[in-house]
Length: 454
Image (tube, rainbow, N blue to C red):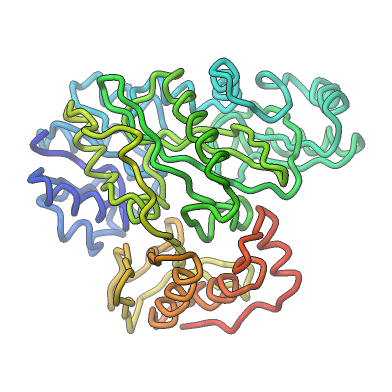
């Protein structure tokens, strides 16, 4: 490919621009009116405005993005994450225009984007799944029957989407009808699909995902795991690799399972296979993300493999060029998300103009951000404005380095979550490697919100 369009914004769009420059590929940014001054627009080789600030009138309009791609005469479209990245109809439209969709094909996105179908594919591949319905449930009566069979608590989940939307935890039969209706309604509102399924709720699990790369010649490898257990309302806060919980034996078993899922569904390009792991080391497939992840730099840091460059090379028809045995975990890496939000006000978004802006540096520190002094954080999008990624020879060294890096990250004019994240990072439960998906809830119950910055 000689020229691609980036159908996204913010730090991931800037990340893709940088990968293109290093590979000698021309990049074209699209942007909303609210993002005219964003760094990805300024640093790309070309840029096209696709509409007003609201994402529903710009980044979520397939026809505007495809029109921009045709005007720019590009070879491919990179969707980044979020927005249309896992929309099979968008991928299909891109393919029908003779433009390369930099990701899996639309059929695979459609299959793996339906969590019920994805569970069936994992089961067919011999990978354990959480006990529950084999597909979408028709109504609350069927949900109640399944819940009775597998035992409470259960969780009702939307078959589409993610981010905790269309998801309800149910502890008793008396609540199943109410929570079924609430989950279905939220799923319909958020994803345009009200279908839900029911599965057993695994109490206090680890959330561990495996990064997959698959070329168009049948070669598939995993690049190790990322432990994403530290999350708030199903949104990840801190990610790290390797997981402090996995043994080498369990890592191999889960990695093999991730490759089996990818192979069984005919996966191509970069993707992530996600699992829940209980206290006894028993793991269950939960979903597959058919795109690059926010936390991909963790894997890049640990393995030395540039995932975005790999995506572009795979989309160009190149072979991976390495085998599973060549992948090594060389260090310990941690990523913290930096968000324009106020932990003291229930993490309310804090858009506005940034005054002072200083990012940390030094050995083993990487910052991916599209923000700068004078940049205005728009009100229309996700509140994440950057990510700090650090490496260390040991986990303890990485924790200490991250604490030091966050202490240097200065953001003026708006509120941000850095003080909260530092407090989480230094909590004994996290430091000891014992955090589960319930850690943040327990942490907040034990601690008052740290002082705000800004």
